[in-house]
Amino acid sequence: MNTKPLIIEIRVLVKLPKTKSEIECLLLTELQANPDCEEAQYIAVIASDHCGATWTVSAFHPGKSDDTTCERALQRIVPRLQRLYDLVRKH
Image (cartoon, rainbow, N blue to C red):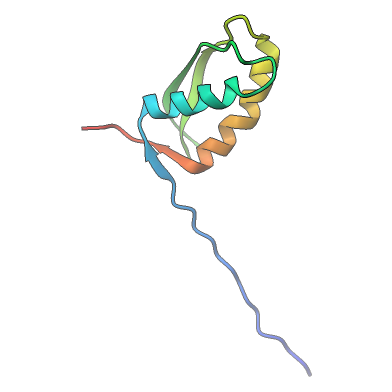
């Protein structure tokens, strides 16, 4: 009987701590980099405890950009950044 050893790889992603304003700035920069979202003006982040995320977007203002296009872009951007950054408070 030929048995191979079982190899299990475990990856632990350490999220980087970011303040509310830092996350909002990152989000807005990425959103404005999307076609038809260049005029987006504002993104608000709040603390959250949902599926391992410590923050979520509570509101955004698309400015003169298309609201639906920007919302779709945020649906791609937010989960990726939530995997990278934790919301922290500066003392």
